[in-house]
View 1 (tube, rainbow, N blue to C red):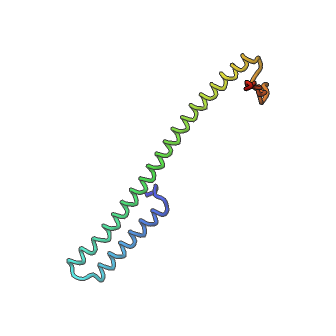
View 2: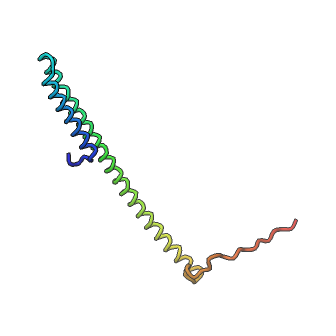
View 3: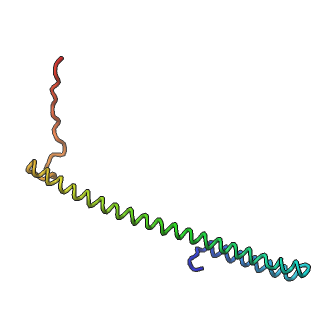
Length: 122
C-alpha cells in the first residue's frame, strides 16, 4: 500500500470504513439470521473488489510511466546518434571547404555574392 498515492489510500480507507460500519449496523439491526449472514458478507466483498480495482489502476499507471521512461531513453539515444552523425558531417564539410577555399569556414563571408546571369536577347 506504500506505492499508492494519497487519493487512492484515502479511497481504500473510506471504502473499508463504510464496509465495517455497514457490517456493524447489519449485525445490530439486521433481520432474521439467514438474511443477516448474507447481508454481513456483502460489504467486505464490495470493499475487496474496490481495493483490487484501485490496486490494478495504480499498477497500470506505474506501467505507463515505465513505458514512457523507456520511450524517452530510446529517443535520447537516437538523438545522441543523430548528433554524432551531424557533428561528423559538419567536420567533414569544414575540411572540404577549407581544402577548396584555403580558408576556414568561420573566415568565409556570410553571404556569397550573387552571380549575374546573362539572359539571351530575343
